[in-house]
Image (tube, rainbow, N blue to C red):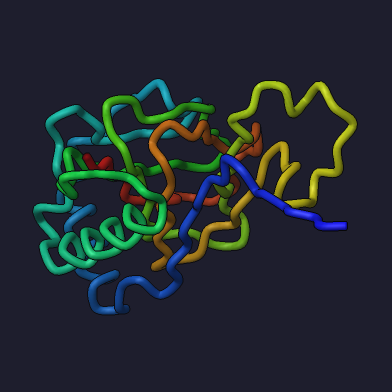
Length: 191
């Protein structure tokens, strides 16, 4: 008997811990403090969450060494995922969530690879949850802890950690309320 196993339609999420140095973290925090006046309400966050997101924003232009390193990571991600991209960060922004805020489920249209870099989080910070894109997965009686049958997967954020994912992958906080003051992250889209 010959058995062939095929894991089809996998979705890569790449997590890079200690992606930036402590010095870069401090520099980014200072840039964010100087630009807090750009924060506004955004539909991806409920209650006490604000963002500098616009289609034209490019916060990472203030942090060129970090931006260059992100582009190296997105290039590696694209090669491993089989995505054909120009490897250009189309837009980037920072988000600040206060206590009792929530990240709503959403995806990032008009881009290929998206990412988040955690700047100020702690053990009380809400994480990021990615949902299985197969709409039929919930119609089966599946274990929620196997590579081929996850209904969702949750990542607890850590400072200086970068997470890359396909832009079409729906994500949010899975209704988990943030309990941290000034939970801060940088998000971006790559084409």
